[in-house]
Image (cartoon, rainbow, N blue to C red; front, side, top):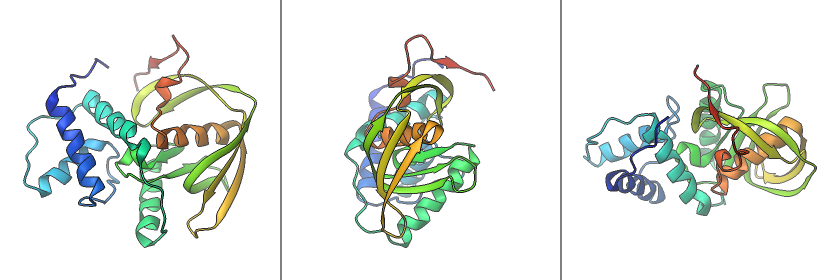
Length: 212
């Protein structure tokens, strides 16, 4: 990857999408492509605004992480209605499409505190609303990547065990005790909700790009 050209147009476009999402003008998750520019393109198209550039991988990453940074102020979910349940299923479908183990609202342009996780084992699929880490224990050094940073991987230090409190899709408060990979996934996705991306936690000198 080369450093993306972050010009005024890119920033204005990102802000435009944030505004559209905030006012609820475009509130449909894009299941065919989780990259932010897809939702952005459709949002602006509905307003008759034609994009003048051809998005590339570097632009995708820029827009995605612009969203994530601003989304640290995103809204908690107060009402779990059919719309939220549909969102959760769409996020799961998107995660599976890209062979991920987790996905957070900001990654798909949704300003809500919601994450989905699937370790592809029985009983390991979770939809967590307004998740909060209430305790953690120990440390583990893990290899980590992210759907928002295609083909990039690095070593990150994560808690060995965590306890997370959240709501499930029925609105019931749940407490999830996790360790190892599940603990890692929970921390990674909750980081997204707090405006933190994994490359900020990567140990110096370990970030690399792997060609598929």
